[in-house]
Amino acid sequence: MVLSETDLAIVHALQVAPRASWQRIGDVVGVDPGTASRRWSRLQEERLAWLTIWPAPVTLAPRFDAALVRLRCRPGHARDVAVAAGELSWVGTVDLTAGTSDVVVLVVARGLATLQERIGVVAGLDGVRDHTASALAAVHADDTQWQLRVLSQRQCHQLRTSGKAVPESPRPPSPEVVSAFLAELRDDVRRPLQHVASRLGMSEATARRTLDRAVASGVLHLGCDLSGAVAGQGRMVLLDVEMTQRRTDALRVARHPAVHRCYEAVASGAVHVAVRLSSLADLAAIEAELADGVAGWRVVERLTVTSSVKRNGHLLDPEGRMLRRATAFA
Image (cartoon, rainbow, N blue to C red; front, side, top):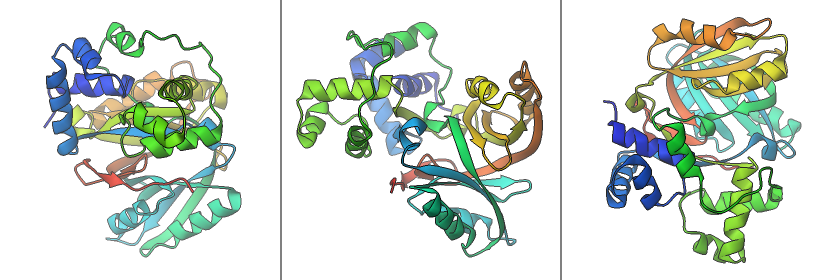
């Protein structure tokens, strides 16, 4: 099943402006506000799409470290291992894969010593046979930034234009304030700011300006995710790529429409790239586009994702529907 163009347009609108009014979303998509709201409620109830909030890597960096852990499992144990890893609150992403690894896990921790301990916990899960792990040097793209390509640039601009001027390079709020907004909006990204402001002891106007600065400065990502299958993009491939100018070219690769994750790994020196696609037959063409202009491009490993168990802190069922949130940064 693939969602209708109208439903996909509503999801894309929420990816662009998750807190936009239903009036504005309806105007852009071409439906009345009540219809937009009802369609979104149905998608949520069926767990096909959900709103997300995630601290940007630049926010996490001073206090948190992350590692990509690849697991080899005993025959028949891979899904049980993946589900057990997904239940750990400090695990952000879990994918079942075909290739040299059976499960790939993103682990987040406060400090390298704790990161090492948590890698050990994941590696010690019942059914794990062997593992490799690499700390991440940089995160250039994550799942919260990936968007559909349904609305036009003009429509996206309409959604982003609130009528209130935000400085081109706004000063981000303090990490403590960002964490406070993260906690208040974690369960409902569209929670009324009047409620949030009351909880945080500030005026609604101050809360609005602060949240706008957090989003505009890039330290807080608000978005909307959905099951890849209902978007017609039910295939995912993880690539480890060598490139001569890692930082510069990784930033370019991260902007490609098919890329939904782009990490620089410390141990291997490779760039970890995850792509969404409608068919595995499209992989060669997408790789050619990614490699264009990238000096020294060489794919050293490819893993096909057979099932995503957890994505950006949300547990998923085998069909890619959201089950519940299961992440807390601690």
